[in-house]
Image (cartoon, rainbow, N blue to C red; front, side, top):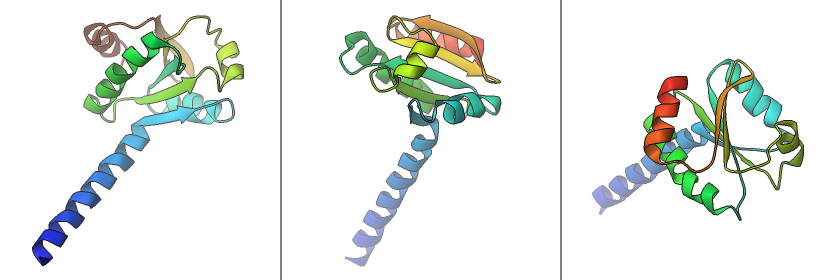
Length: 131
């Protein structure tokens, strides 16, 4: 009985630690924290910004691809998610007219971007070329 409890406890701790690790590489960003979470962070580590919306079907198709790649590339970049409906100032600042719209920031500046839901192979190659 004690062994089972200990095993469950260890599994739970492991899951919590994994969740905490993912929280560091996947972040929600809005008008208030964009400067700190994207611009400033990108001076230390590349930040891929996914401009999306809940009603956007192509955004929902691209989302799992980006999440998979950030997990695979753990520590190489941060995935920042910006819901355009909840961050109108940032969306306007970066002239987001179509979504999904993905921008890669390094040293506080956009170094590359793409618009649309592309297959994993495209996104993987895009990341490899730019990271």
